[in-house]
Image 1 (tube, rainbow, N blue to C red):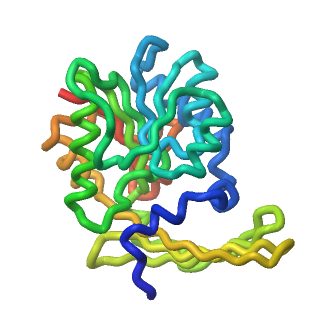
Image 2: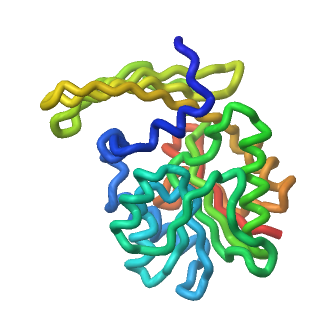
Length: 248
């Protein structure tokens, strides 16, 4: 298979994102946000960071529950969509170098939804993200990380073809055992205009014990592990790996 460019994420998250991930909609964000509020006991006076906020669906869901959060993302097209929702302050930044103070001036809550961790080819860069999460959280600040279930990710559906409105979306997936990464090639065809685009994805997958240990080394203690946003216990067949915890 063709090797994925190391900076694939700088091109992938553009105006086509909401077509490629139409199932990741506002209704889903509402369910996930309600779960986060309950598990992290988020209050209106909390200072909340939505790390990798994308087009702002979770920010809007939080705002509807009287919780004003700050969103940060690298993608200008997605931030423009988030801005149109008017649900909270937005900043463009690299998640490895967040433009926020830490310590007592940091956030009391941080959420990171929909597999927005593990993008970088160099493991030190992924670890830098964890270090930034720990830095910008106040002591006793709470966090939620929503990751792929590593057991499902290692045996991906190799090929799918689906339709989304006037678009045809063909996806090929494979797992790199050497790098512990799920790789995906996406072909997007607009059947109305004939426009065709191709994207690549590459995400590092972490076993639950591995990521819990990585977090613990950086004073981020995982207190609960879920397999979905309904509160089910994590198992090998769970759809997600959702970690909730606190910074020491």
